[in-house]
Amino acid sequence: MRPDGRGPADLRDVTFERDFTDAATGSILVRCGKTIVLCTAYVDEGVPRWMKGSGKGWVTAEYSMLPGASPERIRREVSKGSPSGRTHEIQRLIGRSLRGVCDMVALGERQVVVDCDVLQADGGTRTAAITGGYLALHDALTRLVSDGTISKHPLTEACAAISVGIVGGKPVLDLPYIEDSAAEVDMNVVMTESGRFLEVQGTAEGMSFSREELDELLGLAETGIRELMTLQKLMIAEAPAPRSAGR
Image 1 (cartoon, helix red, strand yellow):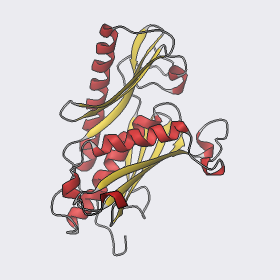
Image 2 (cartoon, one colour):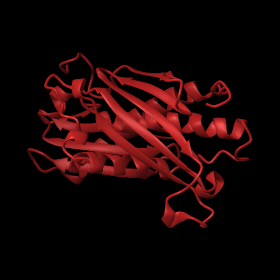
Image 3 (cartoon, rainbow, N blue to C red):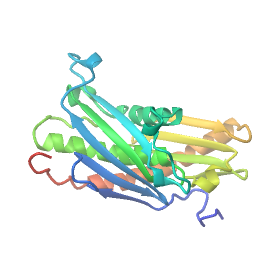
Image 4 (tube, one colour):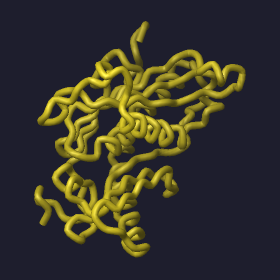
């Protein structure tokens, strides 16, 4: 039995709350156990200068942890002058993952920024950000189709992410902080609905791992991601409500 009573292949309780904020074109509050992340998507009518005239759009992400996200106050990175290396790494991971399932030609010359703000951190913040960020992006793009801004939905398939690891010699799914901090092997996996990998980040924290163990961890991750995608589908089965003028 794990510290929270789950079995090795069990996800934490996962919920998505749509339109948590009114201002963003897409907004999802995702809860994975005690980890809570607010994902918002904003659409800019324009692309970075280096993309002008390409006929393609762009999807990017920003990530931050709010000061009250952990028991010890997290210092705002703006007060340091620049994001940390960890923040840069996570932002790029989220952006790569979302771009991997988006048709940039269908998006046209516009940029979508997906902001992922961690309200409470208990492990798996980056994977929750990708899973919820996909839904925020989906809602934002659905609204662009609904109001006639674009003719075709740019998202080609779903994507989601989960953590897996080896703790006490046993492979486990969806690690909270108490397990993540003690894991011998720590891994984050991002997959598409068609079963293709967008990213695999695996690290030997306390011991090396074998090919057999790697395969077992990937299989465990795929099982968890399939469950997350089932929850995603339940949400997007109903289209988001139209935005009022000016939104």
